[in-house]
Length: 140
Image (tube, rainbow, N blue to C red):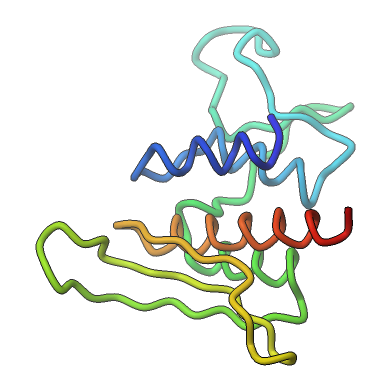
């Protein structure tokens, strides 16, 4: 699953997702490993969506979409030169509860990535992933 695929999946959901956390962990922190599949385990009850397959067993993914502190860590991993903003508020009942942005500190404080969600960690994770894709597009 590419970063773009992860973003597309997160755009379609409003719930934290352990499987997506595993893909993000492997993409940014544990690049030599892969998310585990149910058939990697001896029985169906041992598998967890956030499992990561390593050469010696299994690890657990960082809960980026579940926990704001881990989402902040992802922001720092993706763009250590940026600041993140997370806001909460509704103008109408149809609005998203949270909005998140990563911004450049220098050069006019341009928005690098932004997202909205009803979950704070999900909004911040999605903003970080969008900032990463935007950065990669600039490099190309």
